[in-house]
Length: 210
Image: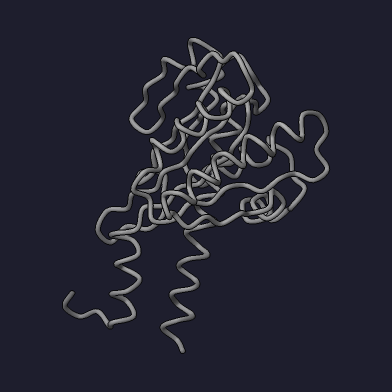
């Protein structure tokens, strides 16, 4: 790369060769942002693809240039449910060089043990593949996106609109005013992935400055 220092070349290689995934994982509406950069491009919507599971037939049939829905598989046991969701996610992130997963919301109520078991299956499958995994707390994702670690889904969506200019609601939930699944899930996956990218880029800058 003529005219670039070796430090710039390292950062450019991050953009060129690294494939990152941000996963907003759940039992009912998991979503994944997959970042595949082109030569010299920074993290942006145009270099991302988004995948989500839903029990809504119309949403599952949506195929956008960047957004791909799929119907969640029927299950007869919790174990089958966990495995089918994890297999769906693994098929998408296969070949990724690094994955970020949103951490548990420790103030959550409801099926917390099932949520933990479900996420544990995914983490184990990623471990088997040797894909590095970073866990990012929900509050960090929110603060990174909006500056507030306790913001709601609508504030996250407003940040998404500023960053991408893409009106997800009109594509996925045209009858809803508020941010609901899968819109909120996709937004979260985007910022999980962007946070991972930013962290890795910062690490490289630190290395090159030593």
